[in-house]
Length: 267
Image 1 (spheres, helix red, strand yellow):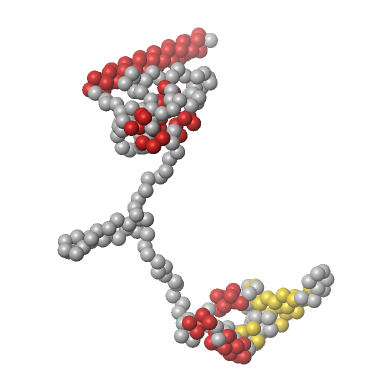
Image 2 (tube, helix red, strand yellow):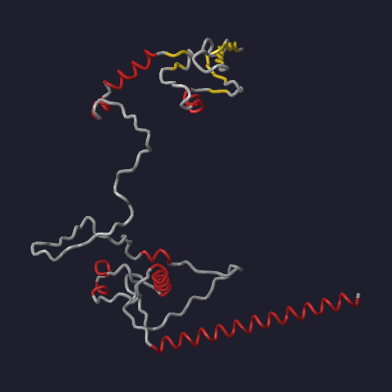
């Protein structure tokens, strides 16, 4: 149960009404809610809503939303509170009345042009180790996690593994052709630098220390012109086989469509 009382509000322009809703039952019995209605019937539930609607037409600085009256003493108390506020004192004892939007004062994240002068005789260029760009750390022999994984076709039949050239020899403990193939495929996919293998001879003796993590787990190799020509021949043969298969499929589909058309005409 609620009791509603609607009265005129003299502190606001003519036509504005104040409504006080008093709760009669429940845990919040005795408490009241205050609302305001404009002359057009629009409802306002808080002072900020009322202030945004009225704008500069009415000064609501000392307006008490609950009582509906202008209380100059309330504005005076707010000024005294701001005067004794530590943050206000730090700013000179005056409240900040600037209504401009705040601007971020930190350094810009965008790159700014910088002129580096090294011609001065006493100039010494030092490298800041903390700001030096570091490559992301990688786990040694992480390619071994791909061991035992095989690809399959749409019928879930495991595809035959690729035969690696004889010049590719693995490096590291318990290395196999499958692991080496996975390492080379990952390096070609993830690295933009040339793939040369482990160029250091010390990596074969102690790969845990001298291993180059940006290169696959194989000895250094060189791709010659003969290797490139052999791969070009294989690619050409594969494309020719694909072209013949597509042509045969197209002819078979055309013959099937012709046969269905003849059967439809005969019926």
